[in-house]
Length: 423
Image 1 (cartoon, one colour):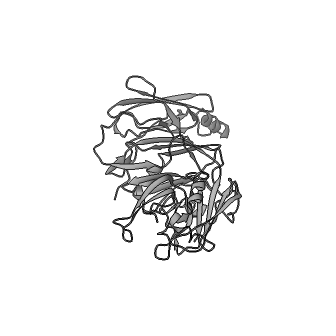
Image 2: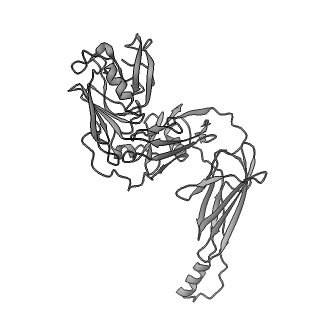
């Protein structure tokens, strides 16, 4: 197991308490006057002359008797290092990882209510390139792409992030949305995946900017983060699919209105489809399902118009061989079979990130088997955060009866390892 390690080693505070000269009979007015005269101070990290500082370091600021009004970070050649303030004002995060074995200088200015200012300078040196193994991270949000309104921001980790290191990692994951729609990260129990969403689905047209600033971040005592990843994506129209095993029908919604209904054939009893609330993860015009080596597999088949729903290999795809059974019987290996014409039409309507709800099958969707951020209530999702979640973050209204509700409302109430297995 990994052991949590702090980002910085020491902190220093610059503060000079005013010398008090006066009789012991000083009244309340004198005390108030001395309090007003207290100069501003600031605690800065990393500490002055600190060495072996991780390249993921940020300038931490904790002001007293005033507020931070300026932070300047420069490298050992005097060049400015661009940085952004944390939303809570606790520090400034460089736009890129710092370089190894380099010296940096930070100047922090604090202004007090009395008009006095204090500037503190600290110089620190970063560590040499780490020889520790890097945790591989993968951001499942591509730059300049358009996604559905249910698309969570998803990060995968190999090896998994131990529980005691998740708060440190989560503090280095940044999501900004325009218009603002704050949310939270939530960790899968095994630490292999973290997902970010707001209480409600994204509004169409939302711009999502993500930064996973993990390069060089100490993760426990035995590993470091692998890379600094960024992406900016856009949210498109709202589309959602409701698949009912009882009727063997798929209902396709756009902006809350029914577009079309398609007959389907789901997983047969020996290989049932999962019931739950999923998200379309990827789309393929052509792909190959290869289940050789899997417990109940052994076949290889080429399929058209395939849309992944789970890491375990459940897809919506064209299945001309089962068109006579669609709407009547379940014959697949867990996938949702639709006609060739229906699958082709569907590919032109859906987006990665669209919500898909399956109900009435023999098994329930397992958390983490795909993008499962909407498979639980908001309160349950928020429990998975390694950091405090603002109490005011709540869905705007009660859960909707079906996934075709317009964006801005809550998700439907939830129905109580990657492979191209398909079926």
